[in-house]
Amino acid sequence: MATQIPGNLKYTKEHEWALVEGDTVTVGITDFAQSALGDIVFVEVPEVGSDLKIGSTFGVVESIKSVSDLYSPVSGEVLAKNNDVEGSPEKINQDAYGSWLIKVKMNNTSETQNLLTAEQYQEFCNSSH
Amino acid sequence: MSQMLKTHLYDEHVKLGAKIVPFAGWDMPVQYSSVKDEVLAVRSKVGVFDVSHMGEFFVEGQDAEKFVDHLVTNDILSAPVGKAIYSPLCRENGTVIDDLIVYKLAPGRVMICVNASNIEKDFSWMKSKHHGYDCSLTNLSSIFSLLALQGPESFKILKSIIPQLPDLEYYSVFESAGGQQPIIIARTGYTGEDGFEIFGHHQTIKDMWKKLMELGVTPCGLAARDVLRLEVCYPLYGHELNDDLNPFDAGLGWTVKLNKTNFIGNLELNKKLSKHKLIKLLLDKGIPREGYPVMNSLGEKIGEVTSGTMSVVLNKGVCLARIEIDKVPTDEVFSIDIRNKLYPAQILKKPFVTGGHK
Image (cartoon, rainbow over all chains, first blue to last red):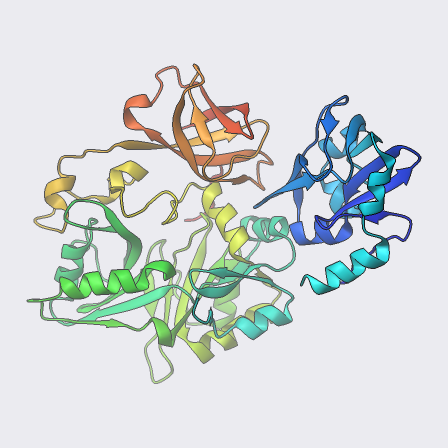
């Protein structure tokens, strides 16, 4: 499966992408994830102000036939959520990296060191199917 | 786990880029392009499913109809030759072994199509009841492939391949005569749309599949099939039906013909006792999934979702749910617990989508 993996982002093994800018992280799901899910029809993300813990579930994306949990790449507080994508989840299928889900203010910026680089994520995708 | 089985069209599915998943011991195509596009193709034009994993039994001899009528709850004897009849297959205690379709091909010649996951269970049950009937019972599942061609353009497409195809009535069957390989065509399906199920030997069906692809028919996978059947509220064994339920528990009372003289389960089914009611629920927001709790207006659990999906046609969550019979609320207020949040659900009397079958 050919899939885009932008070099400026970090990744999780659960197929989230993370754009790190200072102590703020923007989170979405990867092109690999949207392609595996198929037609995305429902997105549920936490309210602004919610506390997230690294590695724990913070929401779901649903395709017609399946439900997948979202895992937080870092710990922190939800600063913003993307209402556009909640209203039109198919945007994730059209542009996974342009369709962010939430922005998080990190408690501990060193947590980003545990995330995968684009190269590592590419390798992970190649080996997992 | 033993080796997964593959249908004779497996390589064709892979060539078309299908995503393959294990289902009832088989490697089956779950989707090709997109579930949404496949569902819409069947509702508005035509799509084709490889359902060769399903089982085909043949009953032949002078007691064929009598034997099958004794096995199942629906009325086989009074249906004319050329009809197809949907029926549960029950035990003496009324519980459902499987749901199946009986095809009356000719006098003394009956075909039964059963769910893939129940082939062995059904066949050994039928064998154990076969004594004393003057007819043979054969499991020919391994020599038959099966396509379901479904959608409003099905007849036009199939007629272009098989010019002698009669304009069959809904739930009727036609078996081609002549020296060629046998082919059995029924106007049946699992989508609510007009369509045909085509039974034939592997090479016949492979050739047919290739012709349908050349004619631009959309290949459809099991995911689209499940959405389509759920939109029109057809039950699926293992979800709405299982070994512990009777037909009344699944809203299939209409398939139990208690005026028949004698059939397996009649004494128990005559009591018309059900412990459950199967209902249809439509959500404005949220997607119900199998196993999610169904609650009444007091927030008490009264049942569970048996099958749920996003309806492609309605763009809303829809489900079938099994409610405990003594907890069916008179105020008809329902909600579904989705990840510990309650979503209101509206009960419907009619299916979510009206298919266009004849």
